[in-house]
Length: 56
Image 1 (cartoon, rainbow, N blue to C red):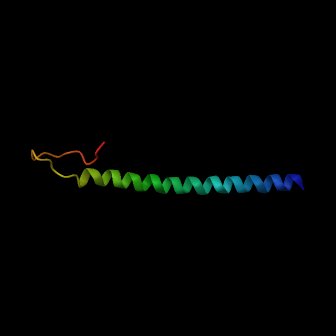
Image 2 (cartoon, rainbow, N blue to C red):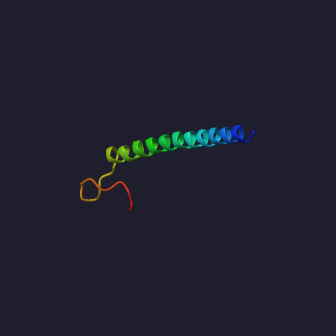
Image 3 (cartoon, helix red, strand yellow):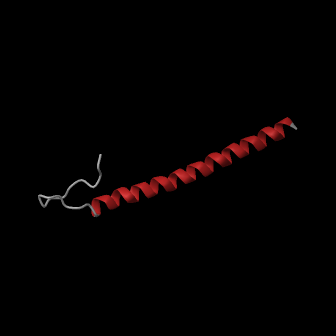
């Protein structure tokens, strides 16, 4: 009975880790798209040149 519980616990942990990693991949992809869009749609500054699109 104990080995069965250990296998089920291991499967649950691996499923949870796999789900979390999949979510993190989607978050990373969204951040990458937003970051790349920032270079395309950045505004001009008062001197007519291209300014930074981020504030930090």
